Image: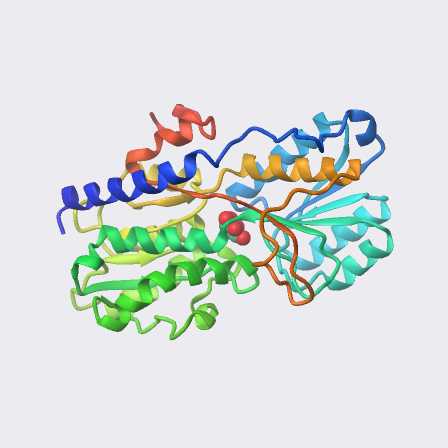
Length: 375
Ligand code: GAL
């Protein structure tokens, strides 16, 4: 498949998706009727619990939300838990004991916070799940995230178009990956992509030489990468390359649910002799992390799904204002996110596809400086 042909297919897909989602993705904070003057915010403590600093996006999420809330007059407590569940629980308990009024939580393990949120409920604290749904507890009041199933659909449709699968092209060798088994988002990412791609696996246009193609969406955790670790993804890809591609068989496409996995997979591909160029596999991602955007520009990743975390922070800050003011909290999805105890009222934001031909969007929006991307 020529690089020129693939690039034109990539540009066509990205342009279509970009237009469809640009209008909806704003980094302006909604200061609608629910906004609260600083008087209501004073003496209000908002706890912000982020999973880790080791994955680039969470540093942006935490600092942006802290800045928004501090500027609005709230007292904040921003904590990162190094991807350690017990540490996050301790941090949350400390926030509760410090008298937090609202908790904004990007959980590490969405099934591990039930007892802690019982304490929060007893203390009259309102809980917002941030980007990752918290499960198995009634004590989650709101959820704010991006369309997680839509992220996966974008990845699947990108592969579909880049390989011209609707046109009958193939067979192509595919290696699929999924996210961390303890992250509720990961099943949505995989389902969105596999609902697009599995028919082509069944038809034989996509072949999985490693045999690691899940039989159904429910089987996604069988190819999950714990903690979204780049190193673990690299080792897994190296194992597959050594075991199933030794005889000259080439990988044509890798479904990676996010950029930290894609980074490790790209390292494994490089170690196996794959170089940027017309035969480099179509590799997907998510988060538009800086290292991955640089890899996209270098021809080592075909796309990433960008979630403007500033817009997510803006929406959560608006939700905080609305909660404090006693206003109706704005949500736009009251059906999708059943956490095992209740359907959590949710605000979904639109993700968008970024390719080497559209990285300017990241600079024009101020998400990156041109110098960040060597431009
Ligand atoms: C997910 C999140 C993704 C990615 C991943 C790794 O929950 O939705 O955007 O950041 O975690 O942290």
